[in-house]
Length: 111
Image (cartoon, rainbow, N blue to C red):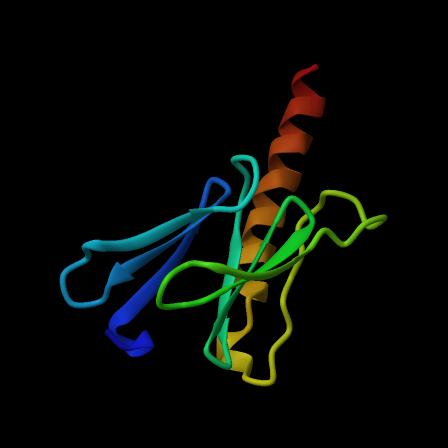
């Protein structure tokens, strides 16, 4: 299998690789918790942020190559900048931030 045969999904603290042609799950790797996961494929590595930490995974196996807890920066949403703008992970993170801000605003007006 080649990297181009896969689609990478971030969901509830995990990264999942699906076969692009069949949708069948190839591998799943749990990162941390059950929060939003930002995923970017860059230079034959899957970069994923979750709970304010970053993980680098092998795209063919899901095996962790490295992990950085980004100690001292909190647990907020993290974006990933790449040299390829179309591969940038900022759009889904901005959408999630907007959703969280709207949810917080609704909760403050309800209380």
